[in-house]
Length: 346
Image 1: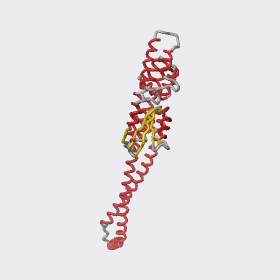
Image 2: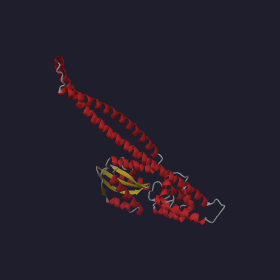
Image 3: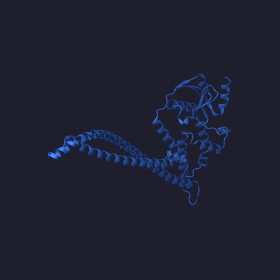
Image 4: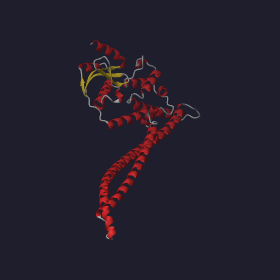
């Protein structure tokens, strides 16, 4: 099983995966500490160098769904650890040790992976069917509008011809009396238009019926699509919603500016944290303040100061003026109260 598959299964919360227990059993304390330091993770109340195996494995398990960079790395590490555990216990027989547990767990993962693939395929098919139904409904509505326009024009023409018919009726009766009955061109046109009017009315009725059927089908497909999407992992559902929102409306443009204080505040951060800060700023510039992952909010009583999230424990502070964002500082979540008190003092 590839590392990406392990990541999807762990995020889906299926297969009874106890990620912290697996990490504690399969990785050494040194390996766990190295992973935590590489991603800038710190257990609450402890330094990474003094934390125990249980504390670090719990920290990595809690951060798995929130730190995207951590997911492929842990997925690959677990894959290698499981493969090594199987190799070490390949010659053992008659024991229910770690290798047998791993083999059973991997069998469950394979089954779950197939079910997830089938579910994704079904969601895509239902989405395509719903899209086609919406397109067919739009075409039917356009045909109905064209039929209504043609019907209106025919009604006007029929009214004009009916007035002519009333005038010519006496003439027709006179011709019948004299034996020289002959159909006038206006009467022939009236008959032809009457037939066209009836045909248009039937077409309109059929179009309305088709529209009602397509709308009913579209609603049923949308309900089925929503039900199927509820089985997908939460991260995939959120990405679908974000893509949908991005396709409906273009994001606002943000012009970034940086103060000297902002660059000084970066000196207190680690390299990985600086990279995370600038990645969040890039998302703000490209996607705007409404991007859900930034959690942008205005801090009351601080002269128009705003904050955005760069990670679980990182915050960026800026002043928003129209489409311009002036970045003033960046720091950890624990230092937020100190920074805000300092700014109030100014």
